[in-house]
Amino acid sequence: MTKPTNKLAFSEEITEQQVVAYLEANPDFFLHNPDLLKTLTVPHPSGKAISLLEHQVNLFRKENKELHKRLSNLIAIARENDQLFDKTRRLIINLLAASSLEDIQVIIEEHFREQFKTDACCLLYFADQPLNTHGRTFALAEAKKQLGDILESTKPITGLLKLEQKLVLFPDQAHQVGSAAVVPLYHQRLLGILAIGSEDMNHFRTSNGTLFLTHIGEVLSQLVYHFQEQSN
Image (cartoon, rainbow, N blue to C red; front, top):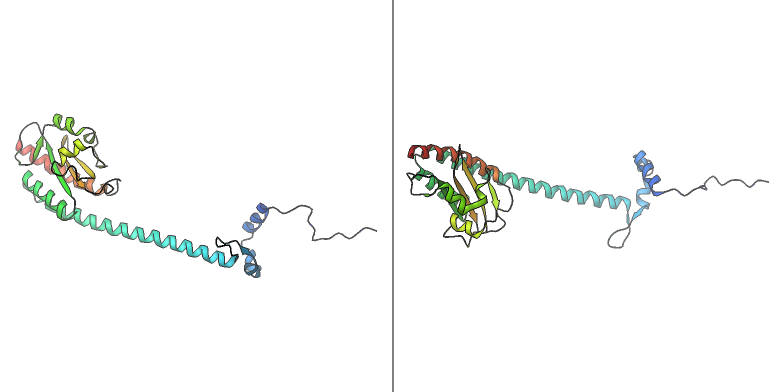
């Protein structure tokens, strides 16, 4: 007589992948079997097993904290950008009212010192002939010799400068400046540079914020070109 077959017996062991595939194919499985959420347990770092439902709640809480943190960071960045935009807008309005290179020099230095709270600010002009300004002027060839690679870029650069470069840009604060941003003033030719220094070595270590420096540089370049042409 043949022995009855146990219908609950499995001819082969069910793999973890099969369980995962089944649950993915049947997302409403736990809706039809809610009691399993209470009985199934998940290991916890503390060593105490917790229910699957509690584990899921903990995951949601963790994800919520991460999302809240990211949102807070985005809000902080947006506020900072709003402040930078407003300061940049006011600087450009003042620059457009300038009537000479002397005016530009005063406006730039005062605005970056008082509004942007920079530790050092320098505006250099490049010209082979004397300009109608008390600002510092270099022949372009001499400037390239003393400042080197920072004059090769047509876009603002940020980071750490060599001591010899800082001595040219910030002669009275060279040893205090930790990081700097250098904005080339270019319109048809290289007219000069705007350099901003911070005692904080990490303040200008990334390219964050160079968009506003680019806008300032574009307006400043047009104005410097106009007044340099008048001086010739």
